[in-house]
Length: 153
Image (cartoon, rainbow, N blue to C red; front, side):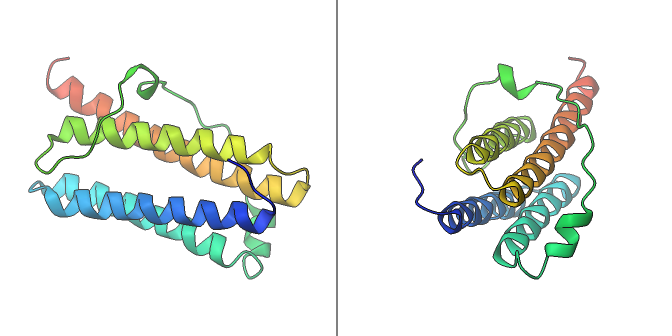
């Protein structure tokens, strides 16, 4: 990833957030389970919030300044899973696995993007996005663990 400006970094991040929202929206439409659909729709809304924040950085300066960083544990479930491609009719388990990997990759992406700037304000925005993606990853890994426990695994 090579960027000439912070605006290019933000443009890239906006596109990634759009892709993530579309993934969760499409996956929600494909599932027949109401609880699964709700979780996926919730994730889509979270990604849309990130997109909006990035598109309106100037208007969100106060929110960004007041953002409270806190440690988000990493269960590392996705670290031991292979990459999957989305397919219509995927099982709930596979959708969770795919979603966890996507959030893991988003987290890594925002960590890498921090290295592309030395501006403290820009780094803070990217750290905020790291934290948000870490929250998503934890949410999905918890859903996965709970689901697998119900299956006796």
